[in-house]
Image (tube, rainbow, N blue to C red; front, side, top):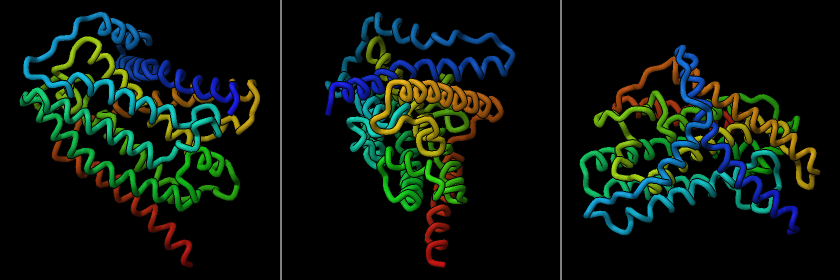
Length: 317
């Protein structure tokens, strides 16, 4: 482990942290332009975070120590998970920990603490949002596991750097199982990030919101940290899809500065394409009712299961 390796790893951690609010602002801008509105500035999420950091924290009288600690635990788990996904280079210092199962565990722990924080104060909206969040998670996690099984059977590993390098190999090629896994991962990403049609991140209607209901009691820097964690989670899933299914441009192990800069530029381009597609999708569909979410995630589960079964059947022939 050299100083250059540590600098590269630190650069990736800083890069995902810096680009997460920009991706959220870009998606909002795309949706506004598609609706023929001017929309907020691309840097508006940075301003919102700065404004919240300057505000005073208001706590409920019956809030426990867990309510105060949860925002930082959620942010730490999400940031670590996002930083483990290869963005512009593979084979980084901590790439041996960049395992799909480890990332799922980190996101699950962040969701667990968020649900606890929603129930801590004892408000009806917090409990409602936490119950819905856990319901969605109980459906999304099996689908995610099936997606991991499908990718692991194709590549032979759940380590992301190995997976990205294998996807560039001509031996993989185009496979139906990979297409099913991609569609399933997109559906899971939409549900996990509380995006339309599962949830509307811009709504504040008590009977329809999921994520916003859990954070209603937060304010000031606590709310800023939770909002930043949510933006990191969106960037994580876009980065994950780009790393696995479009790994072109990732600098290999031991690459020079020029290759890493090219990889960083291509990564920003992939984020822009992902944000554009997300904005177009959210503009073209409406939010579904809560009781239809199991059907939505059931499609992701069945696609992941079909991808796994196809691989088993093709290998047995």
